[in-house]
Amino acid sequence: MAEDKMQQQRFELKYIIREDVARAARDFVSSYLEIDEYGATLPDFSYPVHSLYLDSDGLGLYHSTINGDKNRYKLRLRFYDNRAEAPVFFEIKRRMNNIISKQRGGVRRDAVDWLLAGHLPEPAHLVSRDPRQLVFLQNFGRLMQDMRARPKAHIAYLREAWISPKDNSVRVTMDRDVKFEPEPVARLSVDMDKPMIVFGKEVILELKFTDRFPDWFRELVRVFGLMQCGAAKYVDGVTLMGLEKFSSLALAGERRGDPETRHKDLPCLPS
Image (tube, rainbow, N blue to C red; front, top):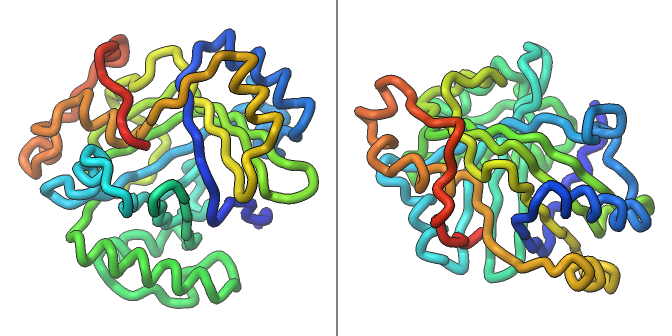
């Protein structure tokens, strides 16, 4: 299994930009960072990312973001393909003031239902021998139980990622073609029925750093006239589709979505 290069704690700035700006920014960024190995040989240097977001029936985690709570978190399962042997990552993404921290533990796909049912993780479930992974999964389970969280939405997009060649202190990502649909069970399939396109043809640019804001980040922002703006994929998706569709009754019925439209008047939401 490849090394996990996730930044466990970082600062994160988001921008919503046009495709032409994204391609020009790519040329700028390539002078400082290297393309991520997962996207190096793929079209547009982008690899698919799939996330299953969990929330309470009252959408407590959604409202925590809408309200701009300084200390909040998200619960999600992340996967990348349909292979039975591919791992699934249980992730906790926390925001404490302006600092983002992430914990995640990778498990075998056949262990997912067991863990979502509230059972404690076992060492045999893990895909890594790192003992911290077991602790991360225990933390996930505790938060899930406290919130009575369950699957709510499947989000998919294409990610172009640039990383620091020497360490993991700086990372730039560009997310395209963000798709969203209600998902009340852990199907863990990359196939979607009738997804809604959340950000249209626009690109989500994220500047991520673990220490000091790099000088060349400042120059990037200046050169392209970037305006910082929240882009919370789960929250934006729920807002656009309508909260009423995420009641227990609605999730049990047919999924709905219009892949051709985006609500252009939606304000920037807290990330």
